[in-house]
Structure formats: C-alpha cells, structure tokens
Length: 194
Image (cartoon, one colour):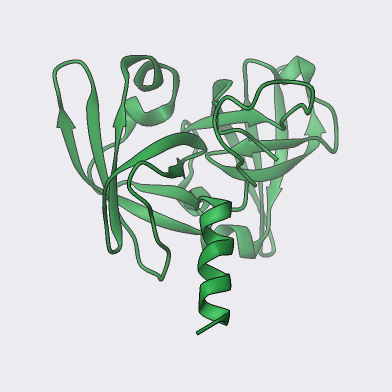
C-alpha cells in the first residue's frame, strides 16, 4: 500500500531479459535503506526488491506486469518515480494507492500555465474518473480536472514538477494509471446491481 507521495526519482541502470521476465536494476537516493523482499512503487507499479548492491537494487517484472504497465518502454537512463510502502503510523498525505496499475494512458496535451502545468491523458477501457477525485499518474497522487470519457487532466504545481518525472514527460509518452480504489469498488457494485 502506498500514498502517491513520491520520495525520489530513480534511474534505470541495467536491464536483463530472462525468458518472459525482465530484471531491472535501478539507482535510487534511498538504496542504502532498502532490504530484500521490500515493496517499492516504480511509476505506480509495486515491485519487490530481489537484489541489492551498494548503490543499486534490482526488481523483476513478469509478463503480466510488462503487458499492463509502461515498464515495457523502459531503457537504461529512464527516470522513475519511487515510493516505499506506506507506514501505518504516519499521515496519509496523498490517497490510498495499491500499486496495481490499471492501464497505460497517453499524454496528449501539456499546457504551461505560467506557474503550473496542465497535462491531459487519454486511455482505453471502462474506467471512470470523477471531477476533483483522486488519480495516480506514474505513482503520483493527483486531483482530476476536466474529467471526460476516456480522458482527464491534472494540474501540476512547481514542487511536483521538479520532484517527479513529470518534468521529462512529453506528448505521446505513456504513463501508468491507477484509478481511485474506492471509485473502482463503487463502479463494480453498481455494475453488479444492474
């Protein structure tokens, strides 16, 4: 379980293919605090630390993960939003994030609003967003604006822009999306009662 508050930006420093799995080695600002079997959110995707070195750690992505996330586009040098799992004795500054990516969306518009940035994303599927509701984009807890069928926008403050990989995001880039878990349960209950 995560909060969507990004702790740091990691960098992919190695990629190794093994059958249908991909082992990804990353540098992070908190590698020295990690341990084997720890859950870390990578652009919103929960992956388990399987190997540690002095300056880097390794996670493994299976075919299911690669099919449903933007990890399949990663290469050496890719900048990744990182968050360690939530501590139950602290504040929930973002929102409840499972680390289970629902789909990949495409960035279709970026507007510089002279002090903030507005990003628009489009996606395929029956997922819904709610105006002023929560959404996770590449692991970052954000508020939905301009909620439409199969698209939404988010506004980014300067702090978030500088401390996440949003500053490297371009039109056409693919991002991981996790829709609000409470909204997903409500949607499922409504579908079952129809």
